[in-house]
Length: 131
Image (cartoon, rainbow, N blue to C red; front, side):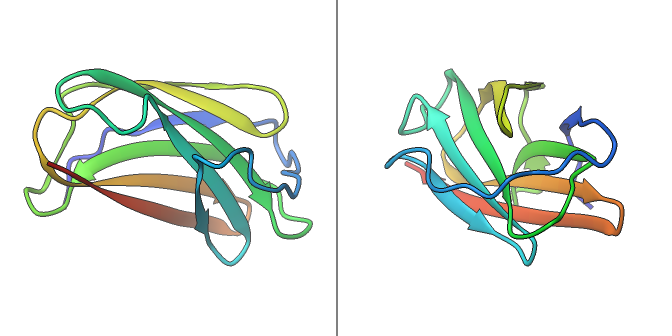
């Protein structure tokens, strides 16, 4: 099992998450049965050995509500996470900013976003290859 460094933002209980379109051309779209999450790294591309941030927007496909959203990153092939602990802050309109990410080595990294709802957890992932 991977060692998890998970930063989470709690939402108001039962807060609805609104449907939305892409916030910009540099955002990647991640999708689950009930949610769409748009994410972009700042700066892009992701630097090795330097801190970066993630801007994210969570969108519901229907009348779904989220209780918490978690952000994480790890290297599946090496079975370890980052050497840093990102902090996450909620912004307005279903937006989040996670700061303090640091990829300390090249290879395949995986971003993980976990969405907690009253009926369970959904996980969205996005892979990035660093040379």
